[in-house]
Amino acid sequence: MTTALRIRKPRGPRGKLVVVAVDDAVTDQRVRRVAADDLEALLRRIFAAAGCADDEAARVARDLVDANLTGHDSHGVVRVPAYVDWLGSGLVRAGQDVEVVTDGGAFAVLDAHRGLGQTAAAHATDLGIARAREHGTSIVALRNAGHVGRVGRYAETAVAAGLIAIHFVNVAGSTLVAPFGSAERRFSTAPFAIGLPLPGRPLVLDFATSLVAEGKVQVASFGGKPLPSDALIGDDGVRSGDPHVLYGDYGPLERRSASRGTGAIRAFGEHKGSGLALMCELLGGALTGGGCAGPVTEEGRGITNGMLSIHLSPAHFGTQAEFERAGHDYLDWVLSARPVDPASPVLAPGDAEARTRAARLADGVPLPTDVWEALRRTADGLGLALG
Image (tube, rainbow, N blue to C red; front, side, top):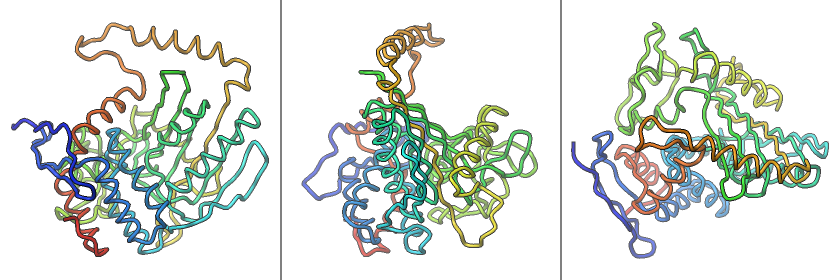
């Protein structure tokens, strides 16, 4: 196995994309490291060419690259070809205004009407923050949004505003995950996130209730980080780490479609993850009015995200000082636990993402060559040249 080349400052003249091919020391697959600002500029051009206004193109590009920077490659650049296809087919729509369906002051129901998820979820988060600052708490139910991306992004926004955030998310029209004890799909990947605003030590817990996010299966299928050997389960009940179990047969650059496969992703934590996935479906899907993962009754409906967001203001609760004092004390005590491996200390939620962000800002964002080629083909299809 070859050693990865370290590139400290992958920067070039303004407007020029800087790409360096290296060998990935983990997967032994060829990857390209791309400067984050150059990658974001490229994505802005792609989404503008796909019909987005400049501000929306910038928002989607920023959030996708941010996902890669934090190490959540499953919600990053790998999604671009699908987003562009969905925009072209009308399954998601650029420039959509979010409709306020119900407004009860401290609670609201919003309909995104298939608008791009990064726009709709940002609107829902901003509203939730404003209402929590006014009332001390808020509950915002968002439905019919395009793929909202990394849910932790919205928790981070609330934490930066000094608020606690809790998010239950589902994906209507997407059955990918088998409930505990089954090999048959019933759930979406059903993400869940919590953010806590401890001063100087913000905490964001963000994960899919599936053992791996579906995007991680995509990344692995394009030559990225391999899956755990038990992440998937075939229709015969045999556990596997082979993406073909979920996607069936596919070519190197072919769009991945779970409809071609017969297997499923497993829920994390056996019955515990399965139970939390069910609650995300019911709260993010049924309560918001956007619908659960299945059964799908409308042909060609595509997928939409539902998100139930709860925001809490420690200042309004009258316990902010104690929350911050006790929170810091307890976190310090937890992190002081003796690690099994002295070289791997106990981490708090968000620590790994912060380290990955620092490394990738310095060294560039690693993209498997198949992901880069899919991105190039998408750009070509929009009349853009990567150079």
